[in-house]
Amino acid sequence: GIDITQLRAQSGLITYDPGYGNTGACTSNITFVDGEKGILRYRGYPIEDLAEHGKFIETAWLLIFGELPLKEDLARFSALLTAEELIHEDLRHHFEGFPSHKNQPMAILSAVINALGSYHPDLYDINDKSEFFLAVGKIISKVRTIAAFSYRKSIGRPFVYPDPDLSYCHNFLHMMFSIPYKQYDPPEEAVKALSLIFQLHADHEQNCSTSTVRMVGSTQANIFASVSSGICALWGRLHGGANAAVIDMLETINNGDYTIDEYIEKVKKRECRLMGFGHRIYKSFDPRAKILKKATHDLLQHGFSDELLDIAMQLEERALSDDFFIERKLYPNVDFYSGIILRALGIPVAMFPVMFAIGRMPGWIAHWYEDYTNPTSRINRPRQIYTGETPRNYVPIDFRK
Ligand code: ACO
Image (cartoon, rainbow, N blue to C red; front, side, top):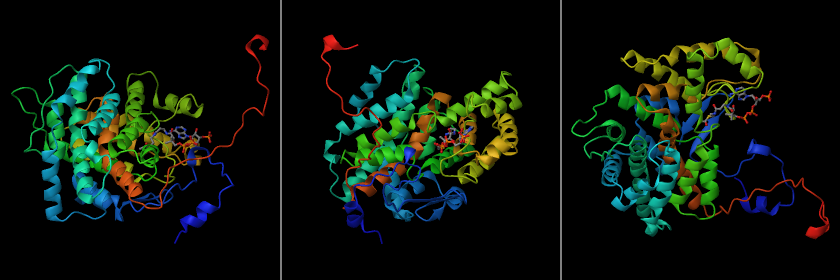
């Protein structure tokens, strides 16, 4: 019902909306969020149903192709992911250019995903659905291999190649934790929890990284470069870095540097933020956080343990009864509990944003494709309100003070 041509013609007026809090930059059929009611739906399906019944790969298909997959779709997709799980041996050598220790897995992930594009220039212009399907398979499958390799590189251990007999999440854990001659065999609950984390991160409409992917894609940049820009945007502490920051915060309290009350006071004095709390859109609760809170308890009941869980729960309870947080409608977001689950699975904190990136990949791809195939989309180009100097005369260097 929106007449885009007419809207475009109405230029001349600039809306000032810092941080784009109220700007709709596109129309989209992918994800629905109602922040007041705490509703999240992927392609019309409530996140709670998908989390209960589905798996990450099914959700990825749904987001990217628009419908839940039929049995044959899923079989075709799984076969493609298996076929694409290795990376080119030359691409493997890119890892050697990064320092082994103190490396930044996000730097490796964004660089190598972008470099992946140079192995497939035939997919820079996607002309039909089969090319798109192939690009999807390459990215969704290889991102997991690249992520695991970046971890192995950081601990100075040999890369573990993917095993074609394993499921998507199991295979990732295998590449992360197997050692020569001893394959890591994770408990079923661990594989399930990982799939759930990926699923819950898979899309969230126009968040910063997804908008970045659409922004870059709007120049008709190729799919590899576009999703790589999403990884860069996700890197920051306020976005994909938040789950790691939650663990830092909980550890500070666990180490005895602050009591829970002291930490809350620090937050209220604005010396720091309560990480994993607050959201630009959710103002009653984040449905993903609810699902993850339950999943954390389930996992811990299955023999996994984490000393930070108690602190997290006390911190949550304390914050939710404090006027500072109530007035500002600050609730736990998806990151508050995801870090605890990832820790329980043995994933090191430096890898947390990488885990987020693997999960968000289907969403980035879906948004890139939606924009790419929309005949009315055009290069994104926000305006600004200029607040600098008025015109002045050039001063030759000898006369400057
Ligand atoms: N702790 C303490 N105060 C907070 C927090 C927090 N986590 N979040 C917001 N506030 C306060 C702000 O200080 C501000 O108060 P004021 O009006 O008195 O100055 C008010 O709440 C509004 O905050 P904004 O920064 O305007 O909210 P915005 O929508 O821009 O930010 C964000 C959202 C970035 C998520 C913010 O809540 C935050 O920094 N949270 C912590 C980081 C985090 O958990 N990020 C993960 C986000 S979810 C995701 O990426 C999957």
